[in-house]
Image (cartoon, rainbow, N blue to C red; front, side, top):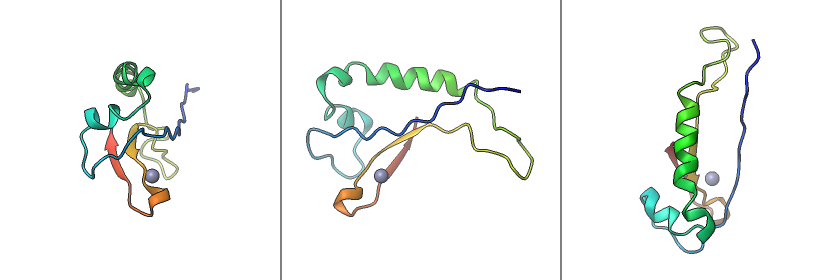
Length: 87
Ligand SMILES: [Zn+2]
């Protein structure tokens, strides 16, 4: 069986500081203005696609985790841990 499979890793600089434990709306407000209005719709479409996603080789030793979608405030360059949030 063939699959349409996405892999994304986009590190978009935030305009300002985001507090630890910030809510998604607070994170979104720190994105470039053009993205602020689009990112919620993008997340909605990812959630929609996620409903159709399946684990490749489910139940087998070589099962792949192909039903994941998440984002996080990345603080690698600050030497701090990241805060993963599921989409
Ligand atoms: Zn990170």
